[in-house]
Each structure stands twice: as structure tokens, then as C-alpha cells.
Length: 247
Ligand code: 9D3
Image (cartoon, rainbow, N blue to C red; front, top):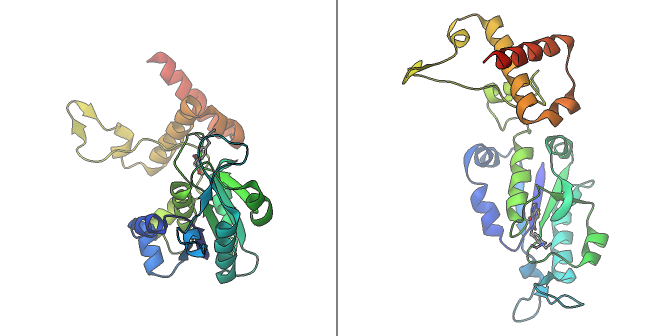
């Protein structure tokens, strides 16, 4: 897959993507990133990319022409059928299902805003979708673009090792994680749950699913609503609630 990023801070994108599993996937050619800086598409001596908002008020607005030229060049290096996504604070909340869908697109242009945002006519003419990564105020779309790239890159075949890949799409999908433990088995009088050291793999799998269901019920009940439960899972959760009520 080819990803293009339109950003006034291309260094921020390149530097961050050198690190970790995503950096290794890039090195191995599993996907490709190209950055397009709107400032390179200006023709005045100051290389102006922003201007004051019509109607007045604080802050600056990204001008249409440099943004449009950068996006059109980006689209030019991507295969046909690629999609253009603007990262904006008012966009649709990015979630895992969107990463899965985007993974199947031939190419993706991510456009990072800065300042108060971009002239609305640019959105209307040049953008297919608008995504946000959550309800908090950031300084621009670069960190969101990196979040989206990370989530998509992990889904590409070959990015993760086989053991990490095996963790994806398991029965515990749509649940929060179960608790993890490592050595030492006894730590200041707090032991690792006995079942995990029992060697009984069926009992361990059952305990982990029960913990995941219980923790999802406690922390993220809306996820449980969305996912639903099998009869067996309902029983495990009831047992979790009963044990919790006795403690
Ligand atoms: C405080 C300014 N806000 C006035 C109501 C609007 C605003 C403008 C520009 C808020 C944030 C930004 C910059 N943010 C992004 O470009 C952005 C973002 C975000 O802030 N949160 C979550 N996802 C994203 S994606 C792009």
C-alpha cells in the first residue's frame, strides 16, 4: 500500500515512522510513505500557506491553493481508487473498523491541518472523508496522521511477527485485555493468579476470557453492548460478577 501525507511538518512524519515495527515494515517495503509539503507549492517570497479568516476573529486559516496543489501531486503518485482523508478535529471518530477498511484501499492520502483549519472550499473540492482521533484539542493533524498510519500498518501482512499477528482477530476481539503477569511469581506477598502457573491450558484460556469479559463490563460496557455475548460467555461473566460481589 502507498500512503501520501500532506503536511507542513514532513520531518515530524518521517522521523516518527523510522521507529519500531512500523519503521521495520517501511524498511522492508511492506508499505511506502511520501510527504508533500504545501509550502513547496507556494510562489511568493514568503512561501505563505495561511491567511486571516474572512469575517475576522483569532487564528489563521490554511489557504486553498498550496493545499490543493500538494494533494493533487500526492494523488498523482498513488494508484487509482486511492482515497483522500483530511484529519480534522470535527471529523468522524477513527476506530479499528476504519483501519481495517482503509487497509484494503489501493492508496491513501492523509492531509494534516494546522492553525484553525483549512478553507472550507478545499474540503468540499478535494476531500473524500474527514477523520478525528478523539475529543481533545491537538495542535494539528500530524500526530493523528501518525496514529492512523500506525493502526493501518500493523494490519498489513508482514508488519508484525507471526506471534503478534496471531493475537489479532481472536475470540477476545471487541473486549479489553485480560491482565498480564511475568516473573517473579511472588512479589512482596502478591502472587500471580494460581491458574496461570497450573499448566492447565483450557483453564487458563477460560480464566483469560472471563477476565476480559469482566473488565469490559466494568470499564467499557458500551463495547460489550456492541459485541454481544455467547451463552457460555454470559455464564463466565455472571460468575465474575458473583465472585466480585463476594469480595
Ligand atoms: C481550540 C480551537 N478549536 C476551536 C473550537 C478548533 C480547533 C482547531 C484546530 C481544534 C483543533 C485544531 C487542530 N486539531 C487538528 O487538526 C486535529 C485533531 C484534534 O485536535 N483532535 C483530534 N483529532 C484531530 S485530527 C486533526
